[in-house]
Image 1 (cartoon, helix red, strand yellow):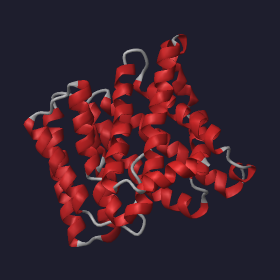
Image 2: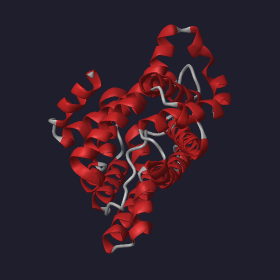
Image 3: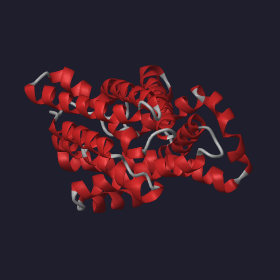
Length: 289
């Protein structure tokens, strides 16, 4: 009953405000994750994020037995593993790059999917803008952290796979219950990464922060995205995605004191323009959980 009341109240909030709130939650979680990198490996923190999301979603949704069997389970499990892998690559990237820069690079994934999926002039132009932005960002980072760029582009490729797989999950899955199952499977499959979290388990505060990353960066944004999709539809949702690299840049600047160089800032703006310009496909994937 309480969840229904909250959902009804959120329906009255403007979609752009909800989307920005979702982005702030997502990248505030990422900023907290950066703070944990001094006591745990980036991949280990990503695993903690997956664990935290799985625990909260399982406790909230309590998926029925049918969600753990057959094709539904296989789809949810594959989706969860791909998403968890994407998060690992992204956290390895933000350990080496400013948050806004890493997010801008990661957005090449959905833009490429959109461009090659429709091949309209608009999407080709969007792809060119994104490529120009990536070149500008990478040029700055060649002498800094080329590995960070490669991790971010790997996260972009994983995001593309997440979108393509997400279409199947949407058709044969069962919504947030499937997400809960998927993160549980991803947590188990990537459990060897837990060895990089040793110091966290000796501190209740650090453990709470690690699980909090999963709530802020996954549970809250995904729930808000569902409300935004109902209010705005897929086309406007795709346009609102352009706000995410800007939000990430602001969080990185205000929270982490990360000031981008001019070429990085221009490259990020080019990516934002490409994201805003691209045409939404028949089913746009949501922001990465």
